[in-house]
Length: 151
Image (cartoon, rainbow, N blue to C red; front, side, top):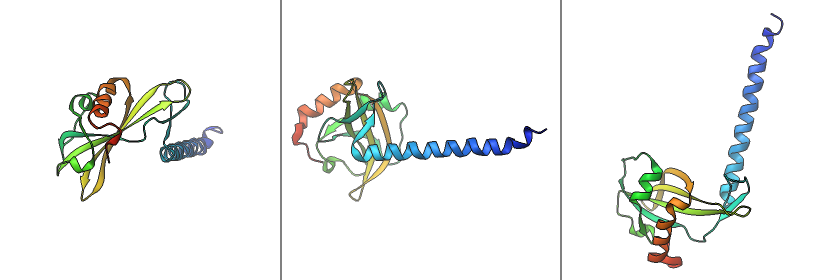
């Protein structure tokens, strides 16, 4: 009976430690996002944004619709656009930003799905994937819009 009477305190301490770890991890991720950096999934090194301009792609999905298997859906359905002015009313788009690891050279791409509402971006989701499956889409955007694409 003696050891069991401390069980609630032990559970509370473990829960508090988990909450503190979660808050620290969240704060670190937010700070990295503001700096334009991320942690490399391969070597845990620091990844920096590779390009100075974000890629924009139009999606064939409207305001209230959703999609599953984001990686395959995005690979098949993204259409390159030069600016948010090209987004039709009620249609969603994704902004893609490429990150490269300064240590091992690995690349990944972060997609932010949004709906343009009265000139403001209404956030719909964020996805991070390896760069290689999307490399042809990024090259297609560069060919069509190059560094001159405006956001």
